[in-house]
Length: 344
Ligand SMILES: *[C@@H]1O[C@H](CO)[C@@H](O)[C@H](O)[C@H]1NC(C)=O
Image (cartoon, helix red, strand yellow):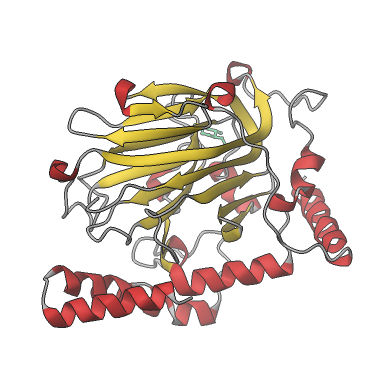
């Protein structure tokens, strides 16, 4: 099965190269909130636009808020344009993710975008994570700085989930690819999941490991979700995995794995590597402290990347910490770091 899938991917990427398709914005239709989603929690803190095509999720002293897809999906492409809350947002977490934690308590799957609030307005960090079959004791986190101010305007965050691989995108740039490796076993998400969007108080861990809490003086914290896209095979999760690919919805796997967002062209892979070299601040793949037995089987480690690990990771964090003390020298260093990130 895996070999067959890999052959298919190879054939597909060759085809794409031959036809010289330029990498361009995905053409994915969006749905109105009511067509694909239901409020999950937070009542008044979930505010739908008049045309129902965008939703604001607020966090205040009383509550966060969230919504969930009305259906469960087995594989697909899931996307939202998100504008993050402004100003001081330490401790605030905004999340856009797939999960089946409500359905499979001990063996759940998850694919996450988590946005970790910042003390400096624009400096949100983004975390991606992958869990399969309840593998939460070996998290597969990665964190990145953003090459733009995510509070000024909406940017698109997407997850492609195929049986063979997962790709996380920011706008049209792939930032992470997880190719299913046989040794991952159950760690690769394989049961139907719902799509969630939430905002909540992550004071205990979100910003510098919980050092900086949510300050409700700045509430309400307002995130905005629009361009909601759900391209996938809807299934009844109670039936466990129904592998009927016969008609309604996007249940044809061939259609999914040949869509532009599922195919990693050489250009896209180059863009991904460039993004990661510049913006990734943490990846489990090089975390020998946490995983002494070596990297996960799917990690695509290189000596070059390993050598620059401390350069991407620690220096950026240290600069921000200096700035936190509010000393003039530190502030200049912080401004320089921001300029560097912004100039890419
Ligand atoms: C998932 O976990 C359950 C319980 O630990 C186990 O019985 C099952 O074999 C696992 N499935 C896979 C695909 O690894």
